Image (cartoon, rainbow, N blue to C red; front, side, top):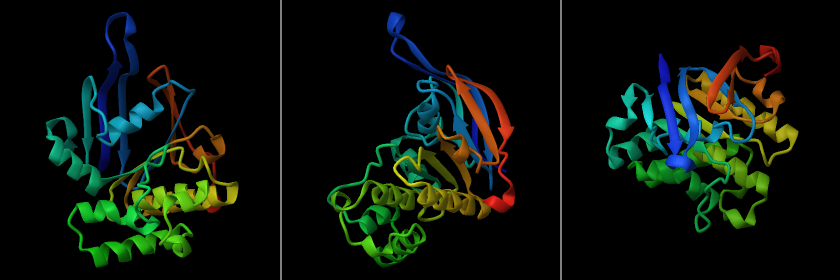
Length: 233
C-alpha cells in the first residue's frame, strides 16, 4: 500500500516576472516499508517536495495523499491532526522549542493528540534512548550540542505510530558514526511498516535507501536502486 501519493504536483511562488516554479508536475509514490532518498542541486525543489508531502504547504496544482487522505480536502484542524498522527518531520532548522526539555519536545506531538502525559513521557524516553540521548532527556535545547539537538528532532519525528517519516538532511550536524546510527533507525522504522522520504546531498547516505529520486529544476529526472548491500545496513 502506498503511504504517500503525489500526482501532477506543481508548486509556484510569486506571479508574473517574479514567478518561481519550485516543482513541475511531480509524480511520486512511497509505499509502506519503503525508504526513498531525494537528491539534487540547491534550488531543485527538494525541501519544497518534503513540505508538500507533510502538508506544511499546498500545491498550486496536483494532488497529495497521505495514508489515502487527500490533504487538499482537509481544513486546518484536520490537516494538523494528520501531521501529528501520520507524519513525522525532521526539519533542517530542527524547530525545537527552547523552553521545553528534550523529553518534552519529543512528547509534544503525542500530548497535542490527547495522549496522557505519563504514557507520552514513557514513549518519548524510549525513543530518546534509541537515539542515544537517554541521559540528556531533562536538558533544554540550548544546553545540548548541535548533534544532540539534531537527534532530539529525529526522536520527535519517530515517536508514536507515524506512518510517514520526512527527513530534511537528518544527518547534517552528526559525525559519520552517529549519522549511520540515525540511518539505521530510519531503516528500522521502515521495517516496521513506515514509509520514509529523506532529502540528502550525500551519496553515501542516499545509498541506505531502497530507491533514489533525482530532482533537477523541480522535475524528477531519474530513479535508481540504492547500491548498498542489505548486510551493510
